[in-house]
Length: 185
Image (cartoon, rainbow, N blue to C red; front, side):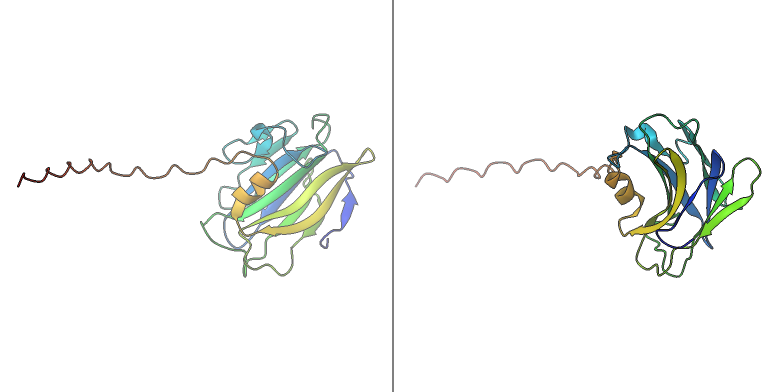
């Protein structure tokens, strides 16, 4: 596939696995017609591996992480599932790393399509592929849209609440004692 190209899904259950020469974090987001999640429960990833019609599978570092979509179990009102990837190492970009998304029939593992986004640089996260509903037909589209602000940037763009790390506690300095009043002349 090339960026922007799409194919109709020949099966109701598909898996998108994303491979790269480095460990990746892969996730899926269930989106409504307005392009947003209904709640944080629609963000599927290693700490929340299952949602309605969508599951995450860890490759354990030896095989690619994957998102499986069962279009028959996706709830009404969800029109798109985006599959995202980011390097596991903090701050690492996709410069020189070419991730490949492989779309498979989830029942027999047959390859339906592959996509490698071209010309990556400072991106620290990607929307690599989307499974979407158009005129009653489920399709897959190659996307390859990069984000320089990591998975948090993708998540917030799609309406997920991202908790910022707490600021480190600052030591409390007691107030200085008041200056002594001047001595009378």
